[in-house]
Length: 168
Length: 248
Image 1 (cartoon, rainbow over the protein chains, first blue to last red):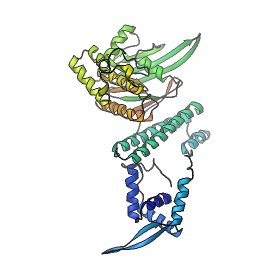
Image 2 (spheres, chains in turn orange, blue):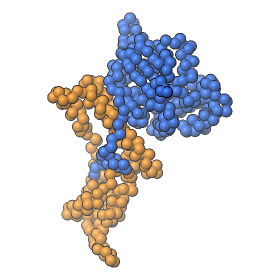
Image 3 (tube, each protein chain N blue to C red):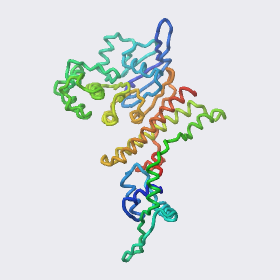
Image 4 (spheres, rainbow over the protein chains, first blue to last red):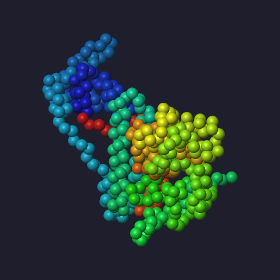
């Protein structure tokens, strides 16, 4: 959450709730709506690290609101983040662990595990399809995010098939 | 009155003889598909899944076992009698598309409906509907050879559905399609399925398979799984938070 907030603040100063709204508007329904409490906690930490500075803005009839600005150190951290290569996805697949270890204990056989997992993936794919249907076709970021999730799921399914061929 | 299943297969076996060596491709498959069901068949290449659907459509002979289509025994039919049954009851989309090259796209799609006894007007209306659902209305007058692979594949689907077949059979119907054209095909499959179309198709594509009522997995010529795709009730509607996770 730290660096996306810095990126949004590099565009313009904002208060916590505006940052939440900006994330939601950008990523659409595919992205889990960020928790406002988490945003404030993160902003507090960024402030402590000197990456952002908060300025109290007086409001009539309401408590002051804090508007956050990016500092020079914050901009440097953001630039470093953008410039460095990003790690590829790592396989950290709980199912594979189950598939390899469960049969050794006699708890389940691999064929049954693979079959159930395949149906589970297809049910996830169905959810993604429904999500895609509900997503504003004009929101390219949200559409690409869902497409990415679908491609990952397809790869998982293909891998499952390889597991079934070689391990059952 | 109960309807017979649209597909009923018992003990189906296919053994190829290549160079004197018997190679079993399908090794005892039983399957029942009721009217209105959508069944996706998945499995690694070489698992026998394509051979299986080819036998269902009478494009390959079986070595042993029985095939019943819409209550009629099909595996004992002569080639010409099977061709008649197929024309009446089965629509195909296979990887080799077999469009008639010297006819327009429109005529390719109307032909099965006309052969099936539809009036020219019914055939034309059905063709116009199917081509527009698949984003192909502009291509109606073109020759199939002028179309891209993805367009030809969609024409083949339109043709397969022209006659309101009892059974739609397909082998990788989205195999040559990019994601946008895949979406058109998925939408049409979903629509005809909701209208009661019985569908049996082979696919690697999880998006296609996820639309099915049931998924059948074939491994080494045998069915190793045959079960419905359950709805996962635990996920709240409106988010994909446990599927999509972005870090930063």
